Length: 119
Image (tube, rainbow, N blue to C red):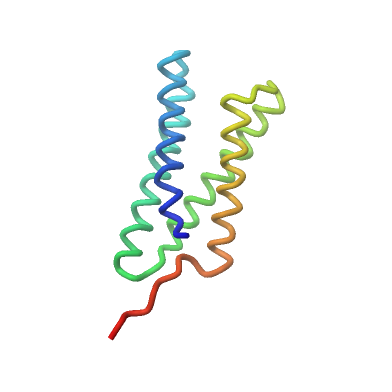
């Protein structure tokens, strides 16, 4: 499975969570954190998709995705440990942990599988 297949929906979910946190609680931190990280994830997913169309891997995008996912895992994990609230801290931390492992796997295995050109 290619990284952008998961990164784009993951980025949309993180961004939607940030916007929802702002709309429901007036949390500017949620808007800046969730919206900002979500946009960065969407950009990284788009860069990876464009590289895939050119039959290449974009390791910068892999790095950005991995750093964002590990950062969210840490920050939201700390928040979950402090509050014991499953939503949103526990869910975001768990999802980000899974995505971190996925990105590290993709980096370790050499990126997206690019099918050879048919001649």
